[in-house]
Length: 155
Image (cartoon, rainbow, N blue to C red; front, side):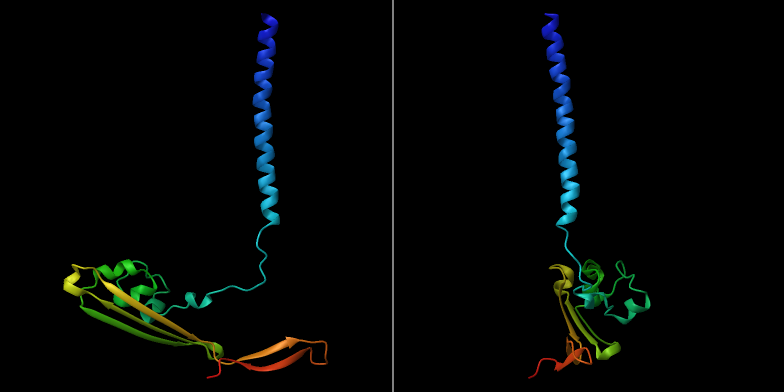
């Protein structure tokens, strides 16, 4: 009986060891394989126009307007603060001109029907114009590039 007891205890202790080894192996595989399948960045990011502050008051406050009541302009920052608006209709227009002929046009509208009994409805529009972009292609000629001309939507 003592021999069987010792064998059973030996097997139980090795089962726990095997579980530990198995979990350790799984953790190592997860850590080392996720680095190999990570997305490779190529120095480009998208939607950077969303980081441009669309409202003059918000720009003056350094963009820290998440809890400020901005009426319809709150659609661009924190739409929940529009709940404090008591006006029936509110509209906001904004135009920001940036370097390299980039313009950022914003429009927001909020409607508060029945004194807020039905909530507040809002709509926003943001238009970005990047101006003329001169297109080039890398080449092995003397200049190092080929001029493709102006790249813009022709109407």
